[in-house]
Image (cartoon, rainbow, N blue to C red; front, side):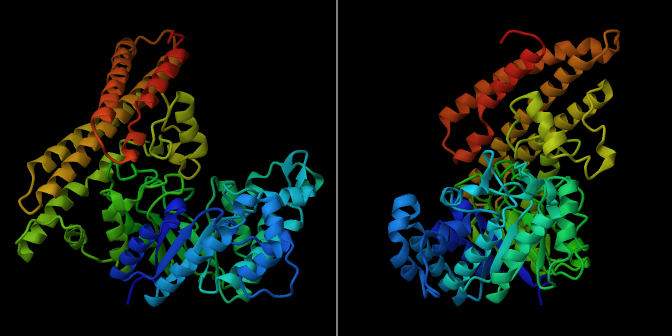
Length: 569
């Protein structure tokens, strides 16, 4: 019996509409004994139904989308021609997936962020906009939500449930990002808005006999408390989905304190295999130990489900399937089944299924080869946490290089603040001499370690095919470039901040050397940007490699730091 009842893989955005991609995901789910597929797109429901009531559908009951279309096609063409035929064409795609997963006993869930709606609704109901801002509290939205989900489950009864996040501010309307200042909005507490939205969803979803899963996904501690107070009052069959860390998938952050604190509701815990915040797999970061620890904690605190994200909605055409972080997916599948799963066996299965074993190996050599690759890969997170994080604080824009000093500290101290969750990090990003030395040493250690790992990979292993060896060498050479870029970026930012903040009478050895060291770092920024330009022209890897290693980011940062120091650029 598996340690977790629900063991789901999550696919995002454009990938969720790619049939071949989804077939590969379904195959992985089947072959690894997982239970569920999650299709994630913020506006998924709105892309696949109209709803017909708002386009002229007046019948008491419709049997399918084509009967709805009989009554509304003229209105659709007049007001929203680009989505006239979209829903009924996407209907065929989704029904195909429902059919094929059903044969394998795999459940499908739709994940979105609410509220979402077709833009034309604002033209039909102009009172929804007040002083140029959408009013989050107009009662229309609760009727619209019920109608939308009623129609959805009439069309797609094979869907097992809806997973939604109401508090991120990434939807079109949310109490967490409401900019309307009308009297209704002023007098409506956020928790009341969440209650109205979630109960409006629950009514038609429950009537259809399906599950409603609420994501406890927020961006600060206040929003955490606002949504938490509402979630605990919802009917007992509503399931809570919680990221393994608070706020987002930051592996240096503490465990999500909400896990185990959701009353009597069932819990599913979410993990990221691709690495939105830890290198996208372009710089590999293998999270087996972290997953095992956090899944074990979740199990102890009563979680019965695990959702594993394979990609990211803002990065079309990319997935852990395409990188060394694919190992994370193997780990998630194995550990969600058995928390004591042998880590070497996880690597062995990955090597076997990807055809990376040299021909003719016996079982003993296969295991020793797996142990060799494990010895290298298990160190990659130590490199990554010293690369894209600064003293465990987020110092990247979803793994990309910050483009200015202000951008870097906004990411680290406002948008993704660790000190919100860990008060010991209050001074982690100070630019005093001692702290700057600690931060610079952290980046030096990341580079030292990744160069060592590249050497270990280049030393090779007779158990790996030549193609597998070349693949590994290529990926670790790219990893070295990535670490080198972040090293010079972080060094340059903190030395600049130190120079701007240092006292005029500071005559310490560090102060005396800082300006000369900073000049070296600025020179390194320019040399590295030229190296990355040449790398872009002379190689042909996946586009996401060049997204992370974009020389223009280094040039933009170089110019910004010079301007801050009052220099010409």
